[in-house]
Amino acid sequence: MDLTSFNDGAQHIAGRPTRGSGGEPFAVVNPANGATVQQVELATTADVDTAVAAARAALPEWSGATPGTRSEALNRLAGILAEHAGDFARVETAQTGKPIKLSTEFDVPGTVDNTAFFAGAARNLEGKAAGEYSGDHTSYVRREAVGVVGSIAPWNYPLQMAAWKILPAIAAGNTIVLKPAEITPLTSLMFARACTAAGIPDGVVNVVTGAGRTAGEHLIGHPDVAMVSFTGSTAVGRRVAEIATATVKRTHLELGGKAPFVVFDDADLDAAVHGAVAASLINSGQDCTAATRAYVQRPLYDAFVAGVAELYRGIRLGDPLNPQTDMGPLVSFTHRDRVAGFVERARSYATVVTGGAATGKGHDGTDLSLGAYHRPTLITGAAQDSEVVQGEIFGPVLVVLPFDGDEEGLRLANDTPYGLAASAWTRDVHRSLRATREIAAGCVWVNDHIPIISEMPHGGYKASGYGKDMSQYSLDEYTQVKHVMFDTTAVARKDWHRTIFGDR
Image (cartoon, rainbow, N blue to C red; front, top):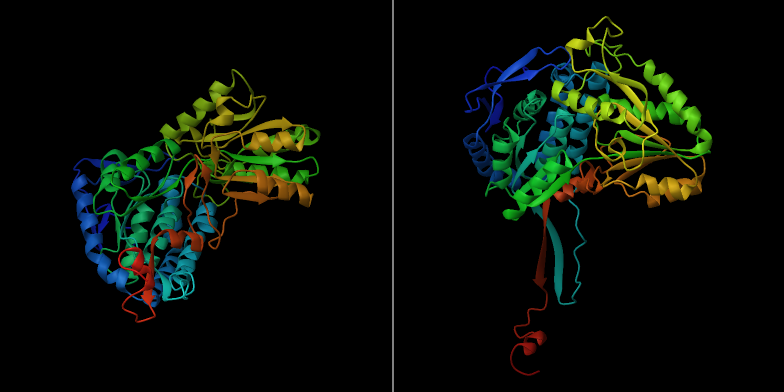
């Protein structure tokens, strides 16, 4: 089975690859060298209509299937993904520029594990126990499919985000139309093809590759789409919510982040330094949970800055397919320039300790000027209200600020519109409990930052959106809750009828 040939088109509708009807070819570009990975034809609104119709037609059979049937299909899917792990990793690296060791050791195995998790979760639709809560009736709760789900996934983790959208939706009996980012659609298409190979019925999983303002907005506003799930920037998330609200759709939004990394004065300094480097540079910093703002209590501040700067300077930039490469390029030249703009503007009001635009040769001789590279960048001396502290840069940039008392550190951690993730670094259990309680974020790590697992939910507070990916909580969000009530008395004239007519 070849999942990697895209010559038949960049759409997957009703179980078959098809070409988009947009006409003009669109280049999926390798950001490491500017080479074209694949030419694709983008979807139009007509293609979206076709995909939604296919999903709607497949809904009765799939939603009526037993949980065991859906579980068996997802287990087969997990096996196919594992069998083709190398292909998925290679294509993911080609279209995003992320290091092959990240694709191989994080993106692909995480997706396989997520698939296996939802294979089990499909058989565990939870509800309140049946009982006679009124005394005269037996009540129970049914969880039913919502319907056709329209999902939009981002470009930073194309494979994992496709899985996070598709798996809970179909495990709960829904059908789905997924629109991946048009610059990174290839592994989403591979995932959909794997679904077909696993025996998931045609039309249950559909992928349309198109632009956000045409295909994306049409999908969100489509009258036959019952639920919308979106992962991306907060600004676009507001637009998604606006369109979805007009047609009274359920919405699930996982939006921006500006994760604080709070280091108290009793922390293990070596652990915090290494944790900050890993957490700020994962996926070249293109991660909504990446550490972006390090608040370090003053006694450790200078040593922390020096330690991070030293490790940053040793990060190996180069060919993403080289197993020794630590960091590849950003996803596109446009995005590289956006990140560089934040850094260059910061030079007027803060100190760039190390980093900036990438020039010269990589560790393996790669000409960095041919790709969208940006060196790990450490900034100090910025004000709390400055752009680099408040704005979502989404690149390999860490800003470090000092604080004095615990109260100040936690206040600064919460002082952005976002609330997706955070971490606290301390040996004191009381400090850690206070931090996890008071930091307003959907995930707070203690003495680590970034690890995620399929069994636990992922989602944010405040401008970081609402709803959860992964875990049983995610599965529940893709279901309708129905209360069913049976009379147990067989009495024709109920006592409560007298409140409407007649006497006791």
